[in-house]
Length: 449
Ligand code: PMP
Image 1: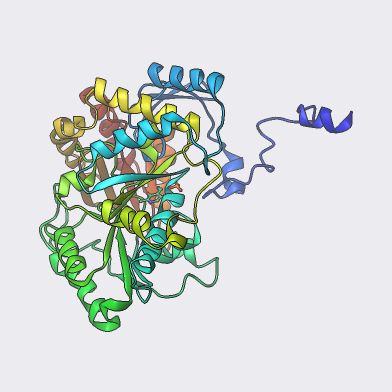
Image 2: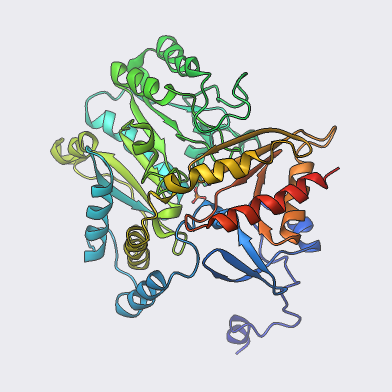
């Protein structure tokens, strides 16, 4: 009948140029439709565009395809899983792979981050961690600890908790009232003397004292948690000054505040260590992850919780013995299978530490762009890089976005946020491919108005 024909796609005039039905995320649909950029295939370091070009992936998709694309082991694991067990309800029920995955993830993280809660995205991991922090204090007899502290320019996904503790104005201003009882520390972008830093910048550890000011202002008995990205990605690659994260940990310890690291980008080898936790030697109470967990193949996120937090629920009063939170697709079998195979690939190819071996080459290649037109800063850590451009008078963000479009024409995929170009290639990138990426970018930058 009519309904079935429509469901089957028998729709007059259906083409990929008819793009209005799909309301695209974080995209100006009307602009996109004039010149759609459609990707149709991916293998290893390259996408194939709809017009048949090989595009070098300088962004690991969206900071997620850390193992590169189309990895056979992951493909087969997902294919086998969907045929064997397509879905199992995750509340009061489970399937064995979720326990195996949790155990393997726990083993990758230092003690006491031994417990994993599964979600479907970075945004959901953030909401989960914030709710865990609040519920923990309540279970622990400190219900007055409700205040959450984030940072200006922080990006913690797009749900209400995440945009409330986040500090990207554009992501907040369309949506009215945020969560109550949230404060923001300053960001650490553009601190004088840190221009063209290689790795962690030297100046700005005193910015961590913003947390002390909040402790003094609100009294620690009202503060539940502070959430930061160890290295902020989406806001334009903002690195923590030397000693900054360590100082946040000290203040949290002194005042009974939980520290949450949002490792949605930094997790799974991006910094050349399994996690930023390892890179900085700072162990938070909760860690949010997603993206690289399945190398982007199936949506999945996970929150690491410390034993202190987990135990509060396992040993607390009866009415608190479970966390009243979860998703229909928590620990989805396909996601678990993809994550397990992804961990295998990371291990087989030693990818969780590859960033450390290639980061010097990456750093040199990036900083060789220092003399290109309009470049006012270059920053790097692990396999992340950012090039900040001088804003165009009256049209901020236009220059970097033009660079993105021109780069795509020249077969490389980069990302921009504001006037910042960000790169985070799959961890399998070769030295030649780094040269290709930065060489092409040099031409693009020097041709900009
Ligand atoms: N937190 C951080 C630090 C992120 O970078 C992102 C995504 N870029 C998110 C949360 C949100 O993840 P998702 O888009 O999967 O919801």
